[in-house]
Length: 323
Ligand SMILES: [Ca+2]
Ligand SMILES: [Ca+2]
Ligand SMILES: [Ca+2]
Image (cartoon, rainbow, N blue to C red; front, side, top):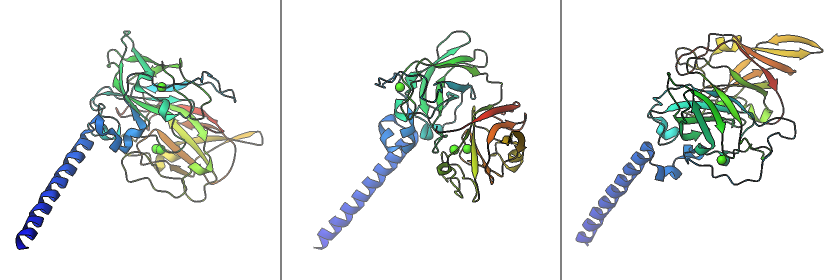
């Protein structure tokens, strides 16, 4: 009896050590981002690293039923090498050390239709870059699924990427259009970020009163209670203050939104700035009044990309309607 219980203790200890060891190995693999453990990493659900288009579709339309063309609004050469090691967890196993380039689409996308192999990046000298991986992070809140971050080898300061073309089937979320053949010029490395798109946001996406998630990526703060109108501003790439901190109340006051009121135009400052704290390229401009917003403006010299290049004077018309 005594011998049996001692055996059980030893066996339990052995099993505990084995499980503990396996857990440590699994965690290490997760952190390292080994591709075969991809299924365990929830962030990888928004990423892809297949080098060819795997989308089977009969959708070929390039203009949706409201007359909007499937187009690329911007491609922003924001990081020339050196994507940080931590991105292997939040982006893909091959991201560290690579170039980073967010691409903004005219429509929200069908996540499953986006493969790394759908993108062709060509440099000034004519060399074709390697797109190692794509992810929708960190711009993955509801209503934001139109910015795809590319990681790979796209060129250098001396031979910069010139154009991005969609060479595979990439579909809008609603299945109305296919982006194959769409193309856009790349914003050069030295340029700061501009506004790519401004769009009114349905109430369901205001996240009223919600705080930013404590996770590093995804889940920005919501508009305050009392909000009656919100406009999402999508920049060409992630923006911060020059010291790396998130946009703040001073930046809120810099935004100007032109409203149309009975034929007249008046400019208003948002009541609150939201979708902060998630490191993405979106801001929500919240207003405590209703109205007819027509244009968003932001003056030069206050927000920067990861290289600390300052934004130029920038403005965009306010689009409306579903994604
Ligand atoms: Ca595809
Ligand atoms: Ca967000
Ligand atoms: Ca944000």
